[in-house]
Each structure stands twice: as C-alpha cells, then as structure tokens.
Amino acid sequence: MKLRLFSALLLLPLAAAADTLYKCTDESGMVLYTNQKGASKNCTVLSREQPISTFAPPKARPNDFPRVNADQQKARDNDRRAILQQELAKEQKQLDDAKSALSEQEGRFEPTERNAGGGINGAKVQERIQPYRDSVQLHERNIEALNKEIGNLR
Image (cartoon, rainbow, N blue to C red; front, side):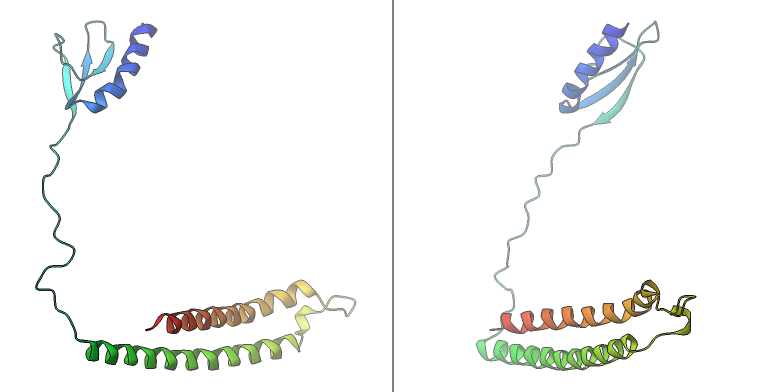
C-alpha cells in the first residue's frame, strides 16, 4: 500500500505537464493521481490545461502616437523645473521650521521627565523628541529627492 502511494507521488510531477489531471479511486479505496484515466471507473477531472494564447502584444509605440516638437518639450521641461524649484523652496522652509522645533524641544524638559531624585530620565526625553527628529529626517529626504529630480532634467 505504501508502495502505491509512493508511486502515485512520483507520478504527480509528470501529471502536471499533461493536459488533464485525474483523481482515481480503485476498488480498495486507494487514491491515485494520474494523467491517464485508464480502466478505473471512479475518476474525476481535477484540472485541465488551457491552450496558450496566441494573441500578439501591440507594438511598443504606434505610428500615429502623438509627438511634441522640441519647443513644446522645452516649455514643458521649464514648467517642470519651476514646479520642482517651488517645491524645493517650500520643503527647505519646512526643514528650517522642523529644525527650529527640534532645537526648542531639546532645550527644555517636562516635569514628567524627571526622576525621583531630580535627575533627567533620558529615555522619556528621547521618546518625546523622536517625532521632531523624524520630521527633520523626512524633510531632508524630500530635499534630497527633489535635488536629484532637478538634476535629472535636461
């Protein structure tokens, strides 16, 4: 019985390459997975391979694809550069504001951040200041990305 099950498992990878996969049960109740229905009468179809599509993908760019002339493209590039420069200036101001808020928060201590002995609990201070640091890092990453995008313009 174990030998039949083992041989059925060995046939399973071959069945995957066939068109149809059957699940057959013999008289003793043993289940066999195969791609050949054979003489067994208790077989059910598990899967059928569908034919491969012969649809050809469209061309990369159709011949009637709209094009812009060099002057239009230059105007678009200039508009894009101006928008990116505005975004960069805005982001720089937000970075300056975030740095200012961070330095203000680093310079003061809340009453809840003091230990019983009057000292400062550094973990509580770091927990309070972390969102301000995250904001500074976010604006620095945004500025870096904008500078990279401006550098990629023609």
